[in-house]
Length: 162
Ligand code: ADP
Image (cartoon, rainbow, N blue to C red; front, top):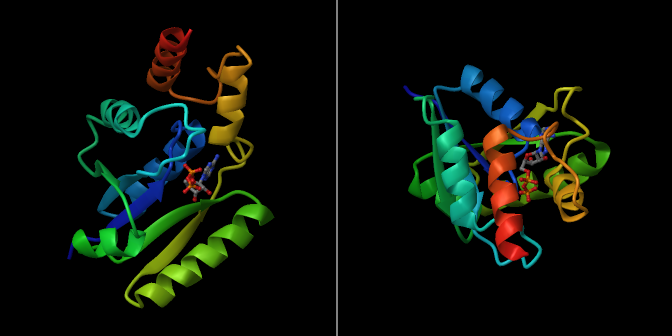
C-alpha cells in the first residue's frame, strides 16, 4: 500500500531547511503532500497562492511530491486526503515543546493521526522563515537560505510593495 505523508506548515517563505525535510521525507515515504496552511497572519510576506505556485515550480519534476493548501483543522484536512501520517521538522528544544503540544492535540482530536518528526540537518537547523523575513525586510539577501525561485519571488514582491 502506498504510504503518503502530509508536511503541513506556513512556508512563508519555503526555506532550504524545509526543502531538506521534503527531500528526505520523499526518500522515506512513497508520496509527500506539502500542505500550505491558509491563515490570516498579517505578518506574512507571501500570499498563500504565491507560496503554493513557487513551491509547485520548485518540485515540478518530482512525481512523489504534491503541493496543496488547506484551512481549518489539520486532522480534518488529513482525513479528507485519507492520510494519517503527518511529518514535522525538529530543530531546537523550542520546536520540541511546540511540536509535542501540537502532535498530542492532533492525536487527541483524531486517534488515527500520527505525527513523525525528522531531525533538522545540522547545515540547515539555523534557518527559519522568520529569519528570512527579517533579512528581506532589512534589505539583505536571503540567497544563502532559500531556493533561487523563492529568492526571485521575494524580490518581485518587495519591488511591488515599494
Ligand atoms: P509552522 O508555522 O506550521 O511552524 P513553518 O513553515 O515555520 O510552519 O514550519 C513547518 C515545519 O518545518 C515545522 O515542523 C518546522 O519545525 C519545520 N522547519 C522549519 N524550518 C526548518 C529547518 N530549517 N529545518 C528543519 N525543519 C524546519
